[in-house]
Length: 254
Picture 1 (tube, rainbow, N blue to C red):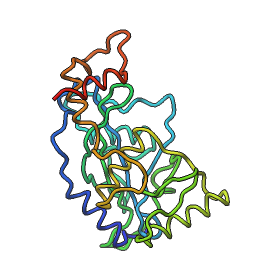
Picture 2 (picture 1 turned 180 degrees about the vertical axis):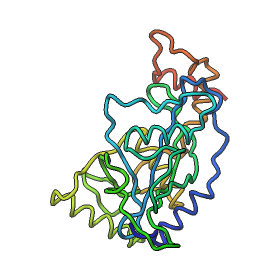
Picture 3 (picture 1 turned 90 degrees about the vertical axis):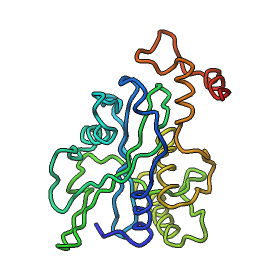
Picture 4 (picture 1 turned 30 degrees about the vertical axis):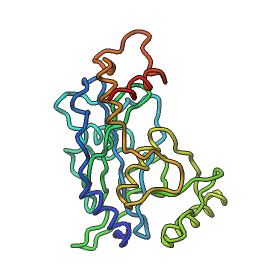
């Protein structure tokens, strides 16, 4: 793929410099820890794209294996199982390389897992040798879906929403035409996956999206308050559910 264009390079630089606030991830029991990889790479125009998979029921739930396993180690192991990306200790064929950029604040899943998003960049162009490769065909054979990174979704179709960003709007218009003609499938991304992607994009592009979104990043404060209520323990108690009432009780804690 092409090297990063100027907009994408700035986005990657911001992610590299990002320092997340203190996290609750290391405080919760092993049974509650999980991590996911937000894997970015450059397309033919140097724009950032993100790998999104349709999870099979036979796959694991991104849980950590041991207390000593880092969030990135968990995320990379899960990425190997889901999309065939070589694990953190495995060698990638040239010119590919995975650069770990940053970790984002943890999110709380409905299953009461504390999920740590780990953002990484898949390099597929070597500026020293000029060697170039296509990760979609040469590295990630089980890729399910690709989405333009940080575009708006309105009326079940992708539409430009930021008049000041001509580069992004042009990419969105191209994607819209491809979807309408059936050249590429159109998937709806929602829930915690969407939240984590939006958080990553807000950091990368130093702006908020045009659509409705949470003002805060992740759920670190809520996770901490739920722990104070005695929730998120090692074993899930029979009949224990994360209800709206429980969330409201936790939110009232000072």
